Image 1 (cartoon, rainbow over the protein chains, first blue to last red):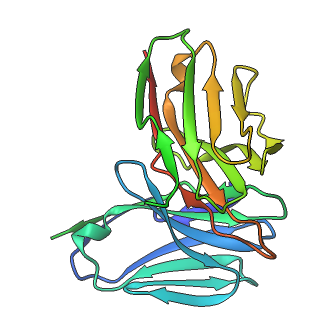
Image 2 (spheres, rainbow over the protein chains, first blue to last red):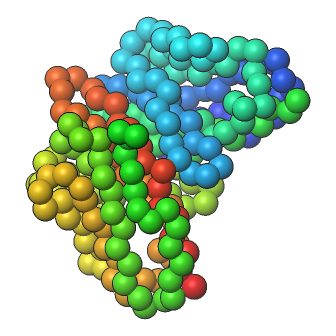
Length: 108
Length: 115
């Protein structure tokens, strides 16, 4: 079993739909990152969470430390949101442990 | 542009050749990371520097791979005697040491294709 599991692996939705991507982890962490990777490969950090909830524009990220679970929500989704969304956790060392990513396609 | 930069963005080479990639981190960042990402997979950690010291290396980093950060600023990743399995996206990230977790900022990556 992977230390970081994401679901779904692939998600296709219509423009305007509310999107939820889930991340579960099995290790102790000091922080959880949500990152966005576009087809060209560049990775952008969206959120870093250690507790609670963060919001940036149409993106919302939540984390439940007790349940070892985080969600990334996108409201009023748009085709430009199409990308791979990756959950990564940071444990006691320097490394990030990465999920496999969720490929999101938003159709106009 | 004060983000993380990588050079080259793309590299095609023949099997057996040596290649070198460069990463320029954000200027005030003292931590630098190298990752490798193959198609359809999440990035895999390769190595990590704090200033000029290489503090951790993954088992993925075979003896054909070497990374340096001589002055604690830019870093190079060299692959000797490339193999087709080395074809991947090589990502560099940097962060600033702080109390508590820090955000890693990623470069655009160098896509390597070994023929």
